[in-house]
Image (cartoon, rainbow, N blue to C red; front, side, top):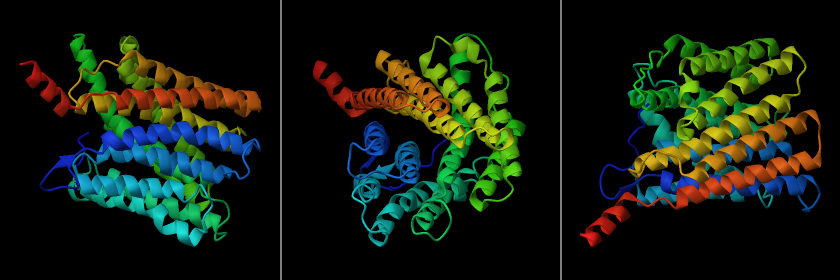
Amino acid sequence: MSTPITGAASGAVTSAHRTMYPAAALYAALAVPLWLAQAGGLLPAGWSPAVHAHEMTLGYALAVVGGFLMTRLSRPMLAVALLSWLAGRLVLLPGLPPLLALPLCFAYPLLLFVVAGLPFLRTGRSGHNAVFGPLIGAFLGAEALFWAGELGLVPGNGQPVALLLIATLLLAMGGRVIPAATAGALRRQGVTLAHRVQPRLEAMGIAGAALCLLSATSGLLPLAGAMGAAMAGTSALLRLARWKPHLLLRRPEIASLHLGYLCLGAGWLLTAGTALSGLPPAAGWHMLGVGALGILASAMTIRTTLQREAEPERFPPAATVAVGLIALAAVLRLTAVRWPSMTLLTAAATAWTLGQLLTAGVLLTRPRRSRRRQDALQEV
């Protein structure tokens, strides 16, 4: 999938990945232990579960999305993007009155839609990329639903909606990026990937995710929502099986993408099981949020950084360890859903934080292309 060229028609331009990716990883490393400390009574004021979910989706995840999609920005525009994202995070920490927090919380999702979503709407009329524009715009709706809940205008806080939007974006975007990466890796092994696009399975997954989102947003037709989640999960797992993941187990930069997509499919199916078999909702939410989002975000941020800085795509050892720690965090967090325990929650938070810190470390220590060109000239 090609990303839109956005934000700067002329002059010096840069890519948002250099700032938004590390910012997202560092924030994720900080937010989870802070929430756990506050939930455990170690800090005087704590986030509600709804605020915690909001920050991991509309905070952490949207920073990753911005770093991926905003590929050509002027430096002032990049500064505006970063500062608007930071402002949206900071206004929730001290508990400012909602009327003061609202404009700052909407600033970054609105900017992301204008800079990255609108180009998809203009160029996606053929239908190939048409889904991404509305998806990016829908995060504004998720933000509005969250604040409507916080202000008592609607019951609940729209807690699963933003997460389901992220899961839908991962389903669609991962379904384009991962098979392309897989096909290239298999080609170097002399293997051809025949089932790459799989448009029917893709359409099935997007339709199922849309049905689940409609049910979650309206609060109606829970069985239809469960059916939609089951369709999305089944489509993800069937697509993954056709990408021949067993042939690339020794390539962590590809295997980690496959593992994240496996968690995505499993998370959608667990979400379906919430309505059909009485599973706790937190099981599906954390498989999607910790497993799928955490693993795919870490792997994709590192991989795209290597690509955009013209480095070899092989993961450095620290990147593989980072993905492994986040996968461990997902296992521990799901175990804590079944057997609630502060020990398990602390272990999961520790693994998550270490994985995110390692991810940030890998991202921040990649040399930029301009720096490598200067070093090469000095050697000559």
